[in-house]
Image 1 (cartoon, rainbow, N blue to C red):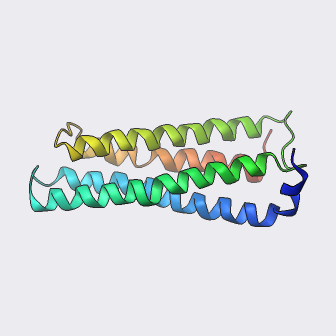
Image 2: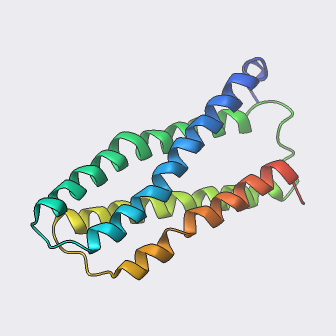
Amino acid sequence: MIPAFAYLYPWTKALHIISLIAWMAGMLYLPRLFVYHCEVASGSQASELFKVMERRLYKLIMTPAMLSTVAFGIILALTPGLVDWHEGWFYVKIVAVLGLGGVHGAMNKWRRNFLNDQNMKPQKFFRIANEVPTVLMLVAVIMVVVQPF
C-alpha cells in the first residue's frame, strides 16, 4: 500500500472512470464497424475507409484508454483501505478485466484480418461479439459497487 495514493484517491478514481468510459466506447463501437465492414467488398473504397476508422479507433482511442484504465486501477488497488484482499469481489472483478483485455486483443486480431482482406467471420459473429464487453463490464462494475462477496 502506498499512502500518497490515498491523497490522490478522488482524482485517480475520476481518471479511472473516464478511461473506462473511453475504452468501453471503443469496445462497443469497433465490433459494430466490423459488422458494417462485412457488408462491403474487399478492396472497395468503403472497405479502405473502414480500415482507417478501425485502426484509428483501436490504436488512438481503445489501446491508450485500456492502458490508462489498468494503470489507474492498479493505483486504486494499492490505495490504503480500498481493497480488503480477503473478499472475493475484487478477484471476480480482476477476472472480468482480464476478460476485457482478452476481447481487446481478439478485436485487434479481427481488425488485422480485415486490414489484410482475410476476414472469414460473418456479421452475426460480430453482432454477438459486440455483447461480450458489455457483460464483462457489468460484472466488473457490479463487483466494485455492490461488493456482493
